[in-house]
Length: 133
Image (cartoon, rainbow, N blue to C red; front, side, top):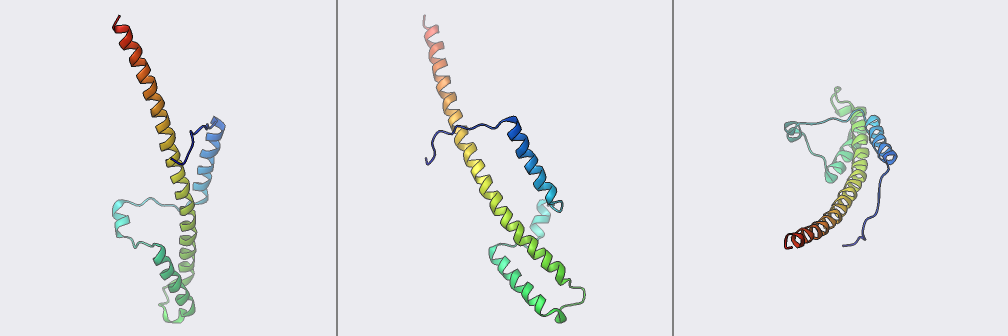
């Protein structure tokens, strides 16, 4: 393993500040939605390659407004693209943090389980020794 024994702690004040930071993030993005499984299934999916396609389409839309239907809102398209690009960047940062949090939880949980097994072994040895008297 690439890590040493993890020694860390969070004070109640630290925990409150972290939770407040999460609340701030949510407050800054009041447009966030929760989709059902069915809604997710029906939507177009935009990945890295799709982002380039959308960017190219946006450039074409901005350069050729006159061939698009009057009901097509190019400015809304721009806003959607910009928000998608920004959310993609933020999601990558959040995924990196989530992976670190998950890995640290796994490592420190393993340490706690190892310590628990050591205690269990000593307690069981003590009880077995007492029973044999």
